[in-house]
Length: 158
Image 1 (cartoon, rainbow, N blue to C red):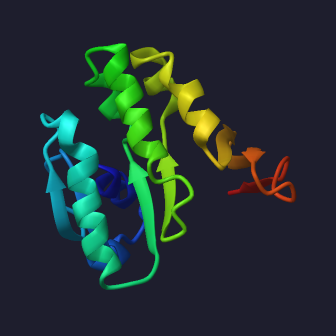
Image 2: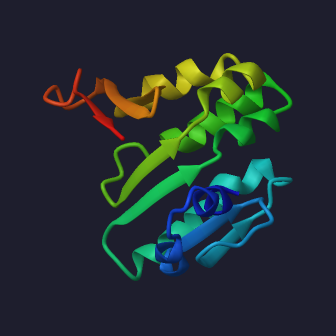
């Protein structure tokens, strides 16, 4: 879906062809799919993801891991316990210097689906960048960072 939206915006997406991708659900394949985790198996997602992550570490020392659509996983949670389990899965990777993760979260969707999830994720995040639009400009604001030099930093892009 994101690739199609980029293409509709006139952006060349050929750079995505060589990206290694771990699919958590979803139907559209983008890049080189190196692992697929079924969303029906919420209880074993972290274990399955870790297996794919470990296989990627055999190829390189550090894995840069952008995560798109993560908020949708929370809408599948059937209880507060499952929400905490998903957050705990994220927490299990915090501090692992072999993995640099960027969670792109649609906070409007997450807050409607599971209002308690966002504060939990914000608590364990090392850096939070809020993206807003002002006309045709995108404003990026660092609202939290463990690196004091980044806190409060703002910039805009056309």
